[in-house]
Amino acid sequence: MRLTTTPKMKGRIATISRLRSHAIARGYRSGLEAKAAEQIAEAGHEVLYETDKIEYTWPQRKSTYRPDFKLPKPGGFFYVETKGVWTVEDRQKHHLLRQQHPDLDIRFVFSNCNSRLYKKSPTTYAAYCEKHNLTYANKVIPQEWLDEGKEIPSNEPISTNPEPSD
Image 1: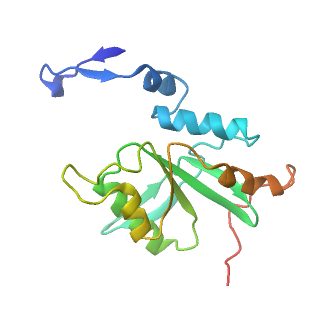
Image 2: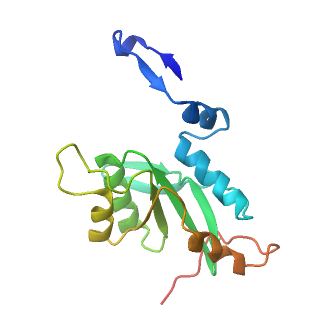
């Protein structure tokens, strides 16, 4: 484990786990992202990590969102967003994205879907997702998500503009 301090920390010591430091060295921001990338590669898919930027408007300002992973599915693609800590800002961002891009298929993989939204919250990440009709999984990308793209011939490109469904 590596220990680091910064001037902002005023003497506190932050720890970075071995898994996270290896993930960072491989270009990911967390160990969960690194595990998801490994799982995607093992399933025979190309790892498309943070390849797209999706524009959306946060009230009063333009913003972009870079989904963690892009996976194929019949008729297009879907995104996988991995989350260890799911902040209120992240939840707000995803509500805005759903309002402004209702055709996007964004799915979540949580490091622990039973985590609470905040310290004494009665609501878990899983309960929140169910209430808001968000697709989620715990710890790993479900095999059925990975299998969705296996029906697409490998020489067929992943469409970046899926046809709207009726």
